Length: 266
Ligand SMILES: [Zn+2]
Image 1 (cartoon, protein in one colour):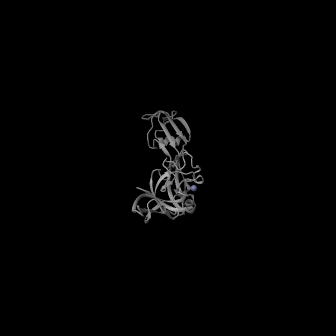
Image 2 (image 1 turned 45 degrees about the horizontal axis):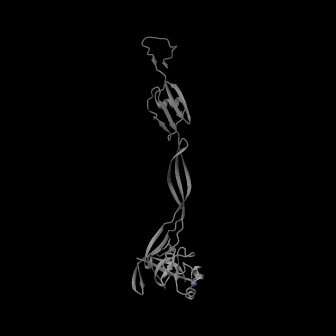
Image 3 (image 1 turned 90 degrees about the vertical axis):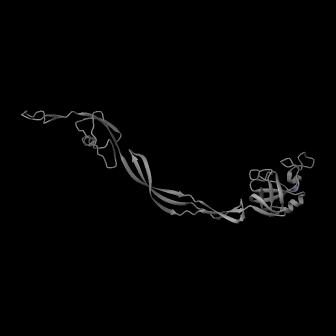
């Protein structure tokens, strides 16, 4: 650019100013343009290029910076929006000790229920891509109800041999079995007749358990039955089930099925 215009007649002390054009690369809105300009600041170049910049937009380098040939200007379009989203509030379990209950046992005092809230997020986009999400407001739609569970703390049980310490108590459904074919599907004379899964012969005090609940070999105290050894398993004995050995089938029938407590001894 030449100032004043090239057609201006020369006179004394006329100052002729020549501003050389520089090449600047401008990237905005997905397009890159190389332009020749006599402007020197980022702001002026953008104005000349007709690129509007909103206050949120990022201009790199910033508008007041001076440019040299070969420089690049980058415009990142920044937009903000608000989004509402329903979010679950998961209930928490509040544990309470009950010193009148055996360790290992628990009881739900009040059932938990998840709540629901509406969260408003301010979402920031740069060139259409989400870069930030910030919760700005929360409105409870359904309040959460936490679950209250009480846990037992007692670690001793009264037995015929006095107080005995235990590691864990279980509530179990108990049934009874004997060595008969009805109970074990083995005739007298079968090589495994009267032999437990552990290999030891049955006798009063032998019980069948689910080894995933009570390890085989554990010493137990069974309410209404007495001291016992977990030495056997059974097809139906899964989870909180226990099968108690009695010498005669009549006794097993009299026993039936009972809900009892089983104590895993130390
Ligand atoms: Zn039987």
